[in-house]
Image 1: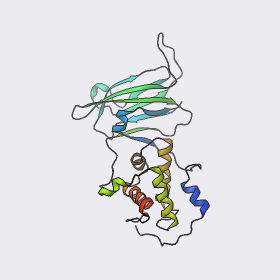
Image 2: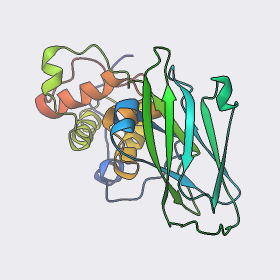
Image 3: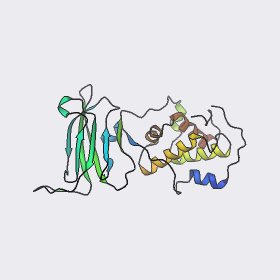
Image 4: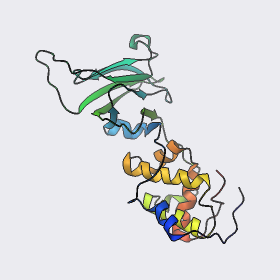
Length: 238
């Protein structure tokens, strides 16, 4: 948790390679695409499927169970659940690609949709829509729905930090050049992965922070650093 000495030599080339969104990022693919429940119920969530692979849609982190499923085009994808819907215990859907079938009178689409209705402990129903996209190289193994993305108990001025990916990137650049963190610190790799997820997976900053396992307080400090030039907490030490 201690701050590194103020003088750390970081080459321009390394710094540009670290924070520039235009350069390829050598990072491990996220296991799951995490989606806040509010966003998932107000817009369609993309789910990538591939031949020979199973893709999951999980509500296991919520108090919801799956009550109804409708797959608009069943000619190329089939689904199963971790429990029969009638039991009221199903929380995960598994999607698998099959050889194309032809059903008399049925229509097909390159991108079909999956409608999922759930019910929670208070008997409140929610309807989710997922766009099923076929891909030869999916970027994640499934989708995990979360009731709310955890955020720190922020002070009033944190809400004015405007925590955009650009500000986070600027804060990280300042933190490295001023020696507040080392280029080899694990937090640097986590922030890089966070920035990648906001670009490639259309995640919010909070969703991406949860996905890579970085405390939101660190992101807040980078936001402060981009605005004020001086962090209030050490950046290093995840």
